[in-house]
Length: 69
Image (cartoon, rainbow, N blue to C red; front, side):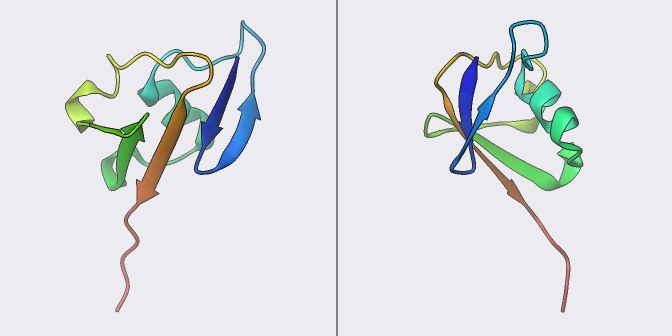
């Protein structure tokens, strides 16, 4: 499976591919509490991260909030 995450192509074998947005976020080591996800131009609500399936060739944007001042 190949997906594009934040403008970069990522390739996964069938048995290592993240099945959901939540699995992708976990795979990347990102805190899901501080991220907004968009799949093929559609915002995914946090409550749906575990239910939103990832398919081959999808474009995913993960936007992280960073504190600062």
